[in-house]
Length: 206
Image 1: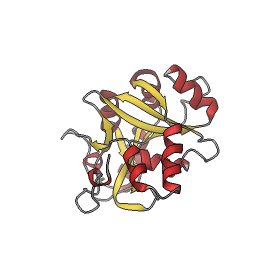
Image 2: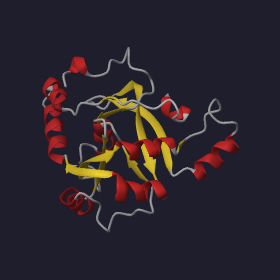
Image 3: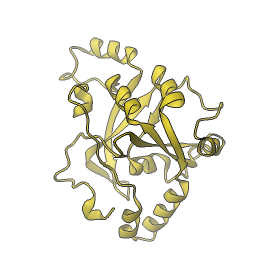
C-alpha cells in the first residue's frame, strides 16, 4: 500500500474500525514469547501454555502492534502473529463489549458502566493510531480485549489461521531505520474500513 493510499489524517474519522479483512474474516495481531507464538503459528491454534483465564488483547492495526511490541524486540513479545478470525466471531466480540473507560455520553452513570464492564466478556479501547515512526496520529485504532467466554471462543472457535509475521516486522523495521519510509509503507498490510452493523453498541460505531 502506498503512502497516498493510507488513511488521511484530515479525512479519516476519529473512530473507525480498520483491518485487513474479507467478507468472512478479519486479521488481528498479537505478540508472544517464542514458546507460545512458535507453536501457535505451526499448529494454527494456541498451545496449552496459552492462558485462557487472562484477558487477551487483539489488534487489527499492524502498526499499533509494532508500537506495542517494539517491532517484536520487547521481551516476551518476540514472535508477532497475524491471527485470521471469522468475521462472525469478531462481530460477536464487538456486540458483547463494553468500553474500557467511562464516558458520560454513553453510559447512564459510572455505576452503570462498571456493572456493564463486569458483565461484558469483551472490552473496547480506542488508542491513537501510529505511523512508521510511532508518532501518534489524530485518529484512533481499535484494541479489543477478550476474557472469559470471549477468550474461549477466540481460541477454540474463531481462529481460521495463524501466521508468524515476525520476519515482516523485522523487514519493515529495517527499512524504517534506513530512512526508506516509502519502501516500508509498501510492505504494510492493507487495512481498510471494516463495515460495522448499525445495531452495534455506540462505542463501537464511533
